[in-house]
Image (cartoon, rainbow, N blue to C red; front, side, top):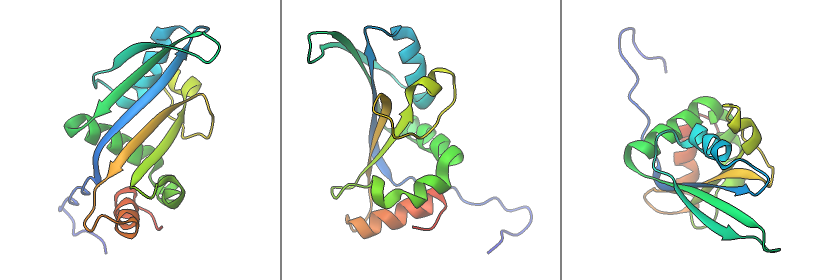
Length: 152
């Protein structure tokens, strides 16, 4: 149904409770570029950085942003605008049984300011908790389809 002229459409309800977005920076990468790539996804949200050690003793930087409130809304709305129909179509495959919604972004492209959903291993990874009532997979899929604007 079309909106009457002059009436704005009500914003879609955000079906997410919280999210975390993380990326690993390897010794061969400039950590500033890795953080730029993460910021392309999360914007001004606070980012924590910690040093970890890889399987072979190599130094790795783990960068993570925990999203809630305005940071969560801003990130998910940007994702919906860029990739809504694709994410709606893939929601069943991206939703776990415990209602976590997963998306990976190409880290190299994000470092260039381009947010691309990807299936690569060396990626920026988003994990968002879907909130619905009742809290079940069917309700979560309906909420995701409504939010991302597609058919599931």
